[in-house]
Length: 575
Ligand SMILES: Nc1ncnc2c1ncn2[C@@H]1O[C@H](COP(=O)(O)OP(=O)(O)OP(=O)(O)O)[C@@H](O)[C@H]1O
Image 1 (tube, rainbow, N blue to C red):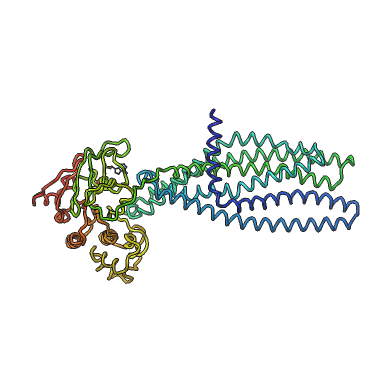
Image 2 (image 1 turned 120 degrees about the horizontal axis):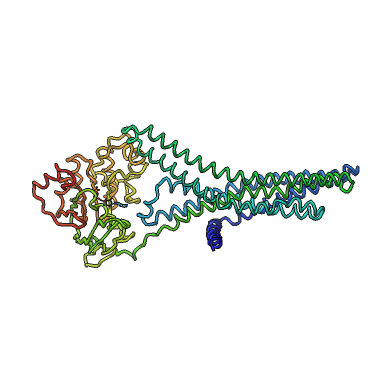
């Protein structure tokens, strides 16, 4: 039962791997044909060498010259075929691995956000590079090698059987041995492969995070701790790589031993026949070559099988990414602006954790500017994630309402109506212009400048030597927090969506800049429905309503000056 299940699973993985090769079948078939041809050439060379030596011994020089020239032609042809096959393999490898990467990357992009965030970016990177590499090698290199070895085995065994059946049997001694070994070591090797890939993921993830958070590493003097962690991760990786390697080496050494025993037996048998005069020098040379060509494939298979197992183990890790749930898209969106927002009887919790939102109901009218306050960790950002349909409510309905009162459920598509400025630095590496343009790719330079002006960013951009073309590093390196925030706001304003969400978006700005940005937002024409999540009273002053998130519900607050003061001077807990 267990074996049947394992076979079924292996069948699924192999089907998936071959499915990926669909667009490259012609190239792969061609590589296989070329590789099989080199195997046949090997056997032909053995037969030719027998005839050549026999002619030389008999003194029939004319025939020997013919055989020698055929021999030379075949050797050159073999070299040419191998060179061409190698170039074709590299090209097919690149095309196929890029196509798998693109497909899986696209799949991740359209998968549900919450599921994707469960994977560390370093792990995803390892899967998209190393695992895709293993799968592609399996199809483009390992599969043709296996077929090459099988053709070589069949042709050499058939020829040997024709000339000397006893030798053929001796040479074949490795056959059952290989099958037994692959059964014993196959499963173990697959498990070890998964461990190797996991240790690679952990290692890459750590390096990635350390480089990203270099500032924290330096200011908290974590250099030594990080170097120690890297050493540990190296140690773990080395352990699994060595275990995998030793398992492969034990398997191939055992086979190697069998190979030499077989070869020695064939050699003794041949020399015995030669001493009795029942065979020629040429035949003995050919036999020895053919014995190698029967046994060689078994050794070859022992080294290609681990590659195949790597491909299978990696396909499992890639299939896992492909199985991520895809986002649901709503039906066609209406042409008119839909600006009202409704949260109705919302219950929400992350996985099986304590509920964050409970029985939450709120309606926001078109054009309203609503401030949301609440203690840290109360669920304000989660509320926005529900509106953006990044997470789904356990119960209740999140919807958008048109002027006519028509409701549209929040979905991936309704994000079209929202411009979002999230917490933290969310810039990409590239120019300032490229970062703002991400809000609306077809925007003119005038529109980009207008958005930057409204976000209070134009003054500092003008002061930069390259202006809009100034380069921004990874996550906005090269800009101050406040400058990065203003670029993020400009990006959101350029989008011209009817709803604008600012999540602590002005937290790093000085009061004067913050007031300027908020005033620009307030004066936008047409007016946008706006949700401002903030701990700062200046931001709340532009809001027509303030809602406080408390115990999973939103409660309307009328704040007097003393309370504004408390928010401003008190801790976030008191907000
Ligand atoms: N992806 C996630 N998976 C599981 N739990 C999460 C996730 N994101 C947030 N949480 C939890 O949900 C709760 C609400 O988080 P949320 O970010 O919505 O709070 P917040 O009110 O916006 O906080 P802050 O003001 O500090 O930004 C927190 O307890 C947090 O630990």
